[in-house]
Amino acid sequence: MISHRSFVILLLSTATLCWISPAMSLSPPGEECSEQTLIFIRHAEKSAEGFGQINCQGLNRSLALPSVIKEKFGKPDVIFAPNPTRKKADLGNYYYYLRPLATIEPTAIHFNMPINTRFGQSETEWFIHRLSSERYANAKILISWAHREIINIARTLMTTFNGDLSQIPHWENDDFDSIYILKITRGDGAPKITFTHDHQGLNELSTSCPEPASHPTSELLPEQNLR
Image (tube, rainbow, N blue to C red; front, side, top):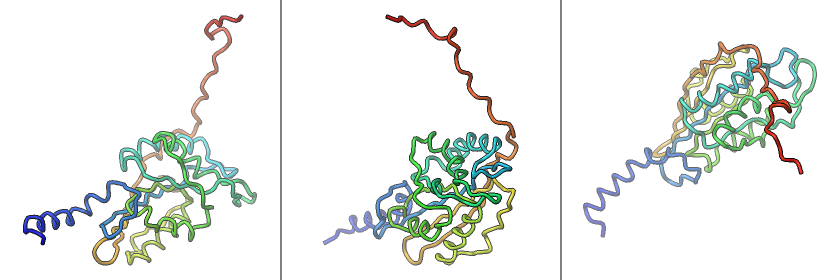
């Protein structure tokens, strides 16, 4: 028999599950409330020649991105980028598609995290299926991808969870600064999805690459005791 006091504690515990669950556990949520956060960024500025690569301004963006992610979202639980071993048509030629991975790599290094590159850029159906797994129901997921695929993924998820498609704005071709944020809350009743449009604030970075670190000459190296 459950006492009145125990029953009240049980109700309070149940009521706070939605607040406890977003503490970024990757374990299955069971019947608890859960909140999944999907943070989409586009790859950084690209080379005029394509090459599947970012340019110097894009490199500066990638190096500034860790502080933006940390300030706005904290440390993510998982980072995704497209598989760089798949070739993509880029200005009439096929290159290995490195841009999203190159963009997010400094952020992964900053947080001492791996990057999941299992899925190719166009394999959005399989990628959405992975994002929908219980493993990631409470996760904060950072995704670096191409903007057209980001729009497709966001619209598919909004449709799946009966969200308002009109909230998803058009992503301009020259926009490398936008952040799309989807929050999917699961608990009592039907899951709910919300969309937020944010920005990195990194559009005014230099178009010149950082100077390479100088290599010490032999005269500057400490003396070595050679025997």
